[in-house]
Length: 365
Ligand code: UD1
Image (cartoon, helix red, strand yellow):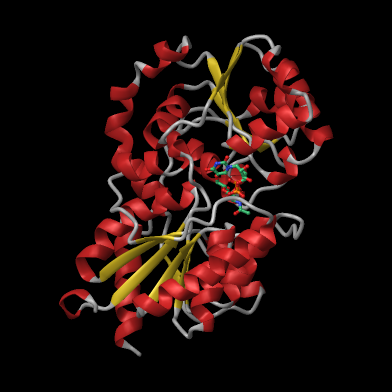
């Protein structure tokens, strides 16, 4: 039964960036609604999941579907099947899905087939590359959602181009909100630099996890060659998928032999922000890190030929170097350094905008 007669909202999450977005929103949603959380179990290692719930003080999931890893069809299908059973039990007034992972798509499909309205956080982003699993996930999710919480003007234009005109809400970016709340904690974690044996502004922070990069041996080799061209210390936070790939194709020793490379397991949210803040620059294929670098005023070199966050490139803060050492050197010579940037809608907190729009939507039904 819904708590205290409040409408029940279910958030479906499963991967790292979704936990980060859920953190600020869950605090606000829980005050106005009966909020429940379903964790698909897509990410399950401590550093990929529980570390985020603990550090960001996200309430424990009400249900964990424990799907684990698998091929796309298998993982998506399993989440959908188990979500359907969970939603049939919880009977929410609305389901919220986040971003563009397999959990996003499966959660949205399970809900829509039970005729439960869907709200999509971070709607409207496009790479226009259907060979990226995330592009398929977000496109389908946008087309079956009732409320589309889009972060940027470019996202709104993408939705319009696909004739999606109903339920659009400009919400700003929950990742900006949580980052802004976390800013005072960054200085307190500065001792991390000595733990890694690195100095402020003298190291490059690196992450790589996109299937287009990790599942292609030629690209992994090009990545190592790029690392060799980066001067100074390089701190590489390695996603478990990437580590497995390096080992599977016997490239790990070549990676570890790159001069001044430090290889580390993935870090929790605040630690990653701290490392980013004190870095000279970040090299990444993560969408979240591109934005975090933008918000913290650090130069970002994106290890992809395109990005969904086109504003970061237009502003001169982000450079699409793909895996090219030449583009790396050119970008480092021209990229705009420290300038703090904002991403809220007229100073309103994204979580408040989203909760308000859900309230209005449910009252209108
Ligand atoms: C997923 C999302 C991606 C998102 C990323 C954030 C999809 C298609 N991709 O990618 O959009 O940017 O999360 O991190 O949904 N693994 C572990 N432990 C874990 C989780 C994964 O070892 O806790 C390994 C497994 O070998 C697994 C592989 O990583 O097969 C890939 O995991 P998966 O969740 O399928 O995709 P991500 O690469 O994490």
